[in-house]
Length: 231
Length: 356
Image (cartoon, rainbow over all chains, first blue to last red; front, side):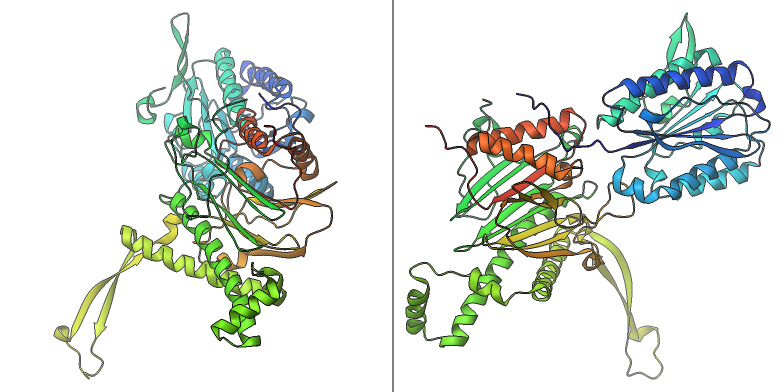
């Protein structure tokens, strides 16, 4: 008979970290879709008994520089932010800011949390030099905490290079890079994020991202799916 | 009532120190699910270990183990959690819990013998007469021998025994051929003033790696009056009293998520936690848990109040079944998919009478 009313137990917090491109190219539909889907994502996690007490949300944006919009906020207290676009795409500063936040929270994460979930979203290529952002990614890959994070990298549209998205992949079993063909299809990606956030909260292995189609057109395309195995 | 556990009672650990392994379908112990209990005077030990769903999915064994020994009036209990990413960590936890309980028991028993011999001489006839005269037919041990123990002494002995276990794990690593490192050792004849190539020899020195047996170790010994606890790594040792419960020792965490300090780590001594205390009059039981059970407990008093209530409303056999339900509760509600092991040492009987 299932046990009911068990008290004194707590789910381990799950750090969910968004790194979102808010450069000028995201103007209009792009940033609007991000804001709408982010709000739905947050609201669904707040309502779900398995995630409402466990998700701690961080949102970092990057354009000319990086900004921590939200820092390890319990999902129950989160009000969905309205992100605004700026100018360039300084990816290096965004990754560096992720690491700043992680270092500040390192003791808490190590002692209390499950593996973080890192979600990278961008529609364009970095305006800083490639060596600069790759150096930051290497530092992230060598970090005790972030080397164990589950990572999902999403490109919107056709401009951002596959190689930029693939650079976020470290653990081929759990990490995924994908592309939505246009911003209208972002909701498909956020559906996947809701699913894996819930799975991680429930102590399950996260599902793999699957390619999706609508009206015979691909909406979510996996980057180099053969390399990462079938879904 | 689920039937799987109903015949798991009274598995006799006294005859042999190996954890028995039986077919689950017969309702007896298996490598995935182990339940053992034993009584000693007012003390009652109940140990439960269940494989986690993540290990079933990954085709890994239950890497947790428990073991115990008993003296005439003392229980020695240990639980170990083999670290998931190491090849033989299940063997490490089995080996460490078996050896630490055996070694501590032997030491405590021998301490008493030494005390008596030093006091009365070692003539066997005289010795036996004295034992009978002082202690009756059943010699008591810990009440006397533990009086010579303080924290420093306990620490010294525990460290010595863990180091002996580490050495034995090195030997096991050698037997399994777990080579960690190859070094070229240059042998030079120092008597020659001008050594040339012919007088030098090179041989390969193999460094064997006990790290593949990585395991935590939680240990306690008690006679019901005094408790000695030691912990290396994570998990938790809790003291449960009538109205409050508390974590006795701080679990050691490693440098990253889900990492901890195993006894195979060279710097393990720095992470050793110890506690010695007299059993409070309102104490109900001690509880040693691997992290699968211990980590999600954030309010020990609330959690254990429920455990006490369940124990008070159930017979021992029913309580064992409830532990399986507790394991399922942790799994199905996302608290832990790790292996989960608990050893209770009840200081007095709080269970409902067993129904016929």
